Length: 328
Image (cartoon, rainbow, N blue to C red; front, side, top):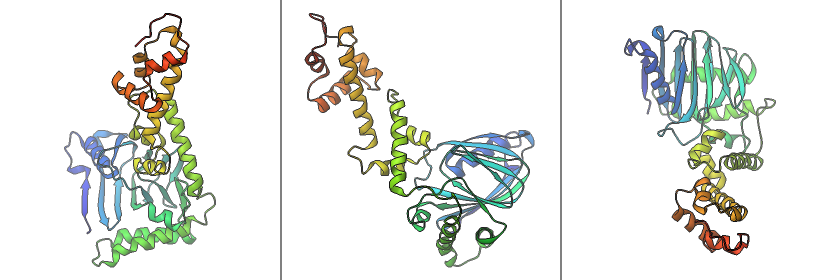
């Protein structure tokens, strides 16, 4: 089904065109947006949005502005996607994962659609943003990962062919015929063929990549272990990976991510109970400081892991002062 929507900032309320445009960007990206424009009151831009099977084609005609996309919204798609951005005219830049790349008509830029990024148009610009699922590209690359963001020279060779296909899809997306939907497979194969010969365009094989991502996730968790608000969504935003991918990473581990988090917290409380026995630090105070919501929750979790209550554990440790009451 081809859904065609056209939105122009001139159709917004005259007193708040920029606010309405920000909301529209959030709807398209599925992420919270922070926008900055040179002149908000005179801001003028438009976007055309069309769905073509698994592909989404966006055509932008925008005034200079900058947008920072960070936290995912609740309705954001779970499937990871790529963006192929092709400038028709104008200049700008995109930053993702600490890497900044320039945008102009000589470059086709590939970046993660669902990862935090900052995007800026430094001059009035027109461009095509083609969103596509990431998994088919991974499969076509035989398990290798794209190094994003990635710039492809579209002035010559395979890159020029890929850019021509993107332009053609945007130009003919309204043409009838079921065959148009099947062209997404052609695009996947062509993109894989182009990036596989570019130096530095590919990262690690999945086995090495998964180890790398797990190490990043665990490092962040251990640094924020005492934060009671720590959850998979928080980790996802911090490391720039989807919650779905994080769950997939830990599906092969002995413990799922949050179960591992609670195990680390219990181990932390256990060590602190031993260290603070002579100082009479209350066990409930220790539990709260490690992110537990209440004494009952902590006691059940502790007993399940160590087979005794926290008070019994402290007593058996043999480190409390002679005759001193046990703090509860």
